[in-house]
Length: 208
Image (cartoon, rainbow, N blue to C red; front, side, top):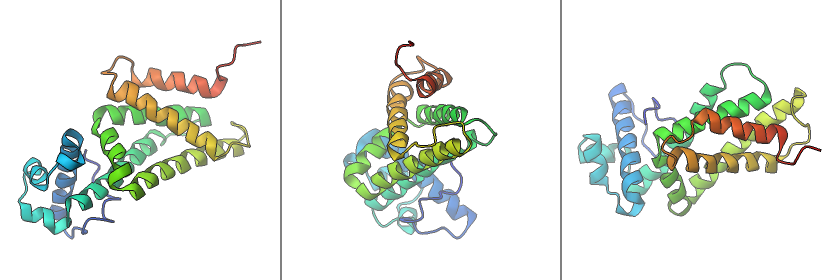
């Protein structure tokens, strides 16, 4: 999961001082994503991570003190990667509803390419509860800010609250689980995002 310099990972990783060090750290985090994603936290091992990364065991301890430390760094790195994927999708000017559609489509594509993100984030609830909660709180806050911006522009209702943002986030999370992780491409990301966007725009009540 190459997201460049592992921003968000350095809270629990020792900061690399060279480009070579940054590449090594990136390889370790990418390898950890596969190791934890396939084996789960308790079955995963540091030796498994370094073998996947093609690095010496000593390189691991240059950046991390333990399996728990790299897991914590990985959760934050993945959270950052999700944010970057959404931000890149929102680079072009668009209406408030179109921004929500684009953000969801980007997340679905990201989740389809990185299915391990669901297992790792779910395990974080028990392994690293602080990072687990922070992931969802920061994601919800980004959605809420988009909703409020839409309200300020007159494109959305002006009285939208935090619970509205969390409802959208919950919908997005489960759509990702169903169509990106379990779906095997049976419905394209753009189609799923369009249906969700129709729900936001029109609701589900019968027309009167």
